[in-house]
Image 1 (cartoon, rainbow, N blue to C red):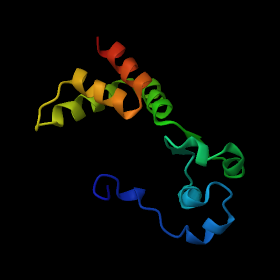
Image 2 (tube, rainbow, N blue to C red; image 1 turned 120 degrees about the horizontal axis):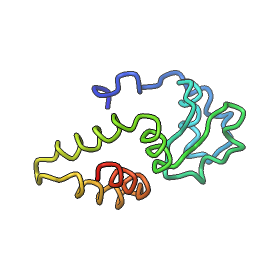
Image 3 (cartoon, one colour; image 1 turned 60 degrees about the vertical axis):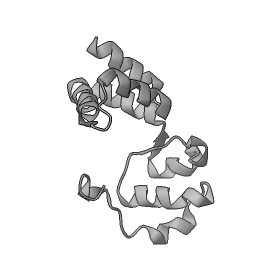
Length: 121
């Protein structure tokens, strides 16, 4: 992750953790998001990030399916190409884009997978 996203490492958020009001085990996530000036937290675990714990920081928690659909809406060509490129990168075993979309459904982003499938047909 550090190689692909060098700016993703957030430091200096630890002092914010005690003031967070979301689920205790995930307080570090909001603290890091605040320090990074993030607008969204993308998570399958929405229940540990209630809106009332985020609103003061103008941060929203969204499901990965919703986030990916937003990316597809905003950047359709880039998003479709990224999905195709990821599928093409599988070598052991090789995977078609259609097979990769099935993996995305299993991973919990079925609406995004369906939207990509409809876009590339």
